[in-house]
Length: 249
Length: 303
Ligand SMILES: Nc1ncnc2c1ncn2[C@@H]1O[C@H](COP(=O)(O)OP(=O)(O)OP(=O)(O)O)[C@@H](O)[C@H]1O
Ligand SMILES: [Mg+2]
Image (cartoon, rainbow over all chains, first blue to last red; front, side):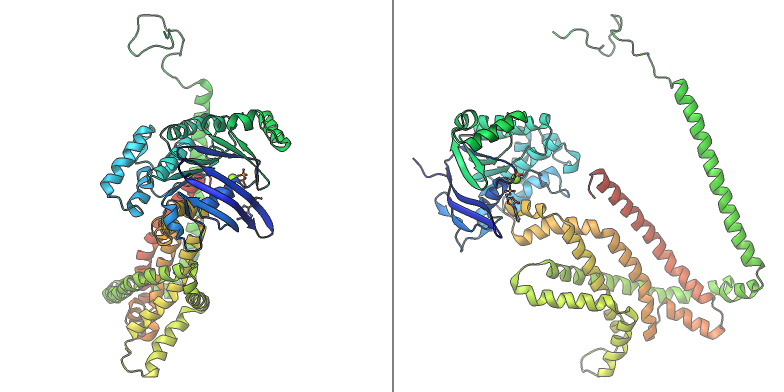
């Protein structure tokens, strides 16, 4: 087997005296998606922020393509060039058009020629049905459209790994679907991903592996059907049951 | 197949599946509402006009019939004299405008730099952050007139070699020093209002700290503080008049010279009018811009 794109070993993260993550170990092979589920406050966002080096970890190792990115001598800017991250709250730049949002990083960070970046941006927008929105400002788009632009913005840089943090939880159900189908398309194209989500149905569709995070630990992991339909751990079973009751499966 | 779901345009062959009632006519209720609304508007306009006429009219009557009116008019509002000395005041005012342009652009650059230093986190800049804070606190806290006097008269008293004694230059420097402190604070507050998630998004796209500032944070921050910055510009225009205390012949000083000759105060009033001719349009424009910004923010549901 080839080396995984991401390998996390014994990661630990604290905020002051509060232990937010501990003993987190998992790998994400190329072209697969690992989905983290778990109650609010279980540490999903923090985990993704740690992988993206937005938060500093307190112990453990994070390897990207077998290269330690958690070392003291690592330049976070260099690492982030290889990672894409999409947030729950979209975080598009409100003073830039959709097109400018997408081409900013390719032109300024990857130093792609302007015309080439615009060309590729249009290609992506076209593929996800947003071509007419290229010159609009983000506040003129629906939530779903904004989130899809945010996804396009992060994949326009050809990241090695895409981190998606509850990208649908700010959207109403109709819009959720258009964003999820975008993610499914990316999965089909072989994008390697780590996701945090509340959408169990979606987890079932795209995940190669599901990890249930509870109070900062991975309590249970495995194939999506195993975790979501037949959880072994009582805590997981309780969580899945509550999600069922909330009607989100 | 889709059947009979509404009618295609120009398709008159079949009877309409629904009766949409043809062309829209305002209903009885709507018509009475409109009449009532029009009446109310007319009444409001009438009341506004009436009250304005009464208030302004009585002010004029009180002024004109007061015992000192003739003396007042001849001392402050002698228009023929005012028009006669207007060129001198306008000539002085070019000094105020030049000073505004020079000081304004210097203040923009220096204020921005100080704001950037104060909001930076680089350890190497720690002493500068501290100095910048003291600088801002000090110069926001003393009357500008004092700064002008200290620099305009104090520096020449030192008799330093190679340092100018030109009061116009020294006065300009005093204005720049004071206003940079104000503007730095305005820009800094703008930078602080940009939500951290914007930085996180920029950094996670691989933008460096500097690129994040340059392309994401500053453009939004400056846009947000443009109305208060324009307010400061208006204040700067009129505060340039303060350097007349150093003997610089600006509009204020020109008026003072004329007044000293004739003991008539019309030149002061003329100088005031010249300043107002520039500051009022700017103030109105600022107001409009501020209202637009607020409307846009409210439309987005932001506080
Ligand atoms: N900057 C911070 N400072 C202190 N504590 C924090 C910080 N960020 C997160 N935490 C804490 O870490 C824990 C995990 O938070 P995190 O946002 O990772 O949870 P989550 O699983 O993403 O929750 P949600 O599903 O609500 O997004 C929470 O208890 C939170 O209070
Ligand atoms: Mg979260």
